[in-house]
Image (cartoon, rainbow, N blue to C red):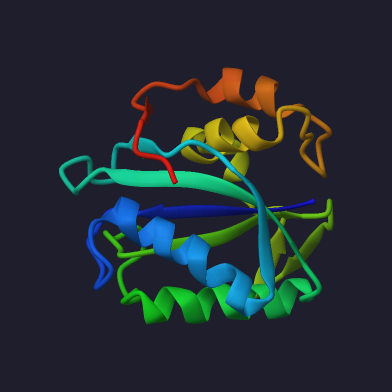
Length: 164
């Protein structure tokens, strides 16, 4: 299984962050990426600067014939199309797309680290991942997503009723 984390905390040309995420989900199939399942949408505080706008986050389980590198390039292109500007690390953004896990593949290539290197520390990834993959285990540690979520907690997360 392949899991992609979606997040945004600034409006894009498509609209507010939740609308941006919905439009991205519509865009993925045209890029050869089928969305098989989608978590609820969650609001999470911005980090490291809590005064920035809150994020809207979700995780999609997808399938594709694209290689991990091809998928990452497609996701980066989609980010650009939705107005993502890269510059300051952890700055507010119109769209953030990350491959959380690509079929359990483990790689530490500079351009694509799998599984996502910080995903196990981020409740805004783990909570939606648990929605779509309650039995998922970290490819390196073998820890279940539910256990990882208990470690980081769910403080600050708000499940939204505005999902896709």
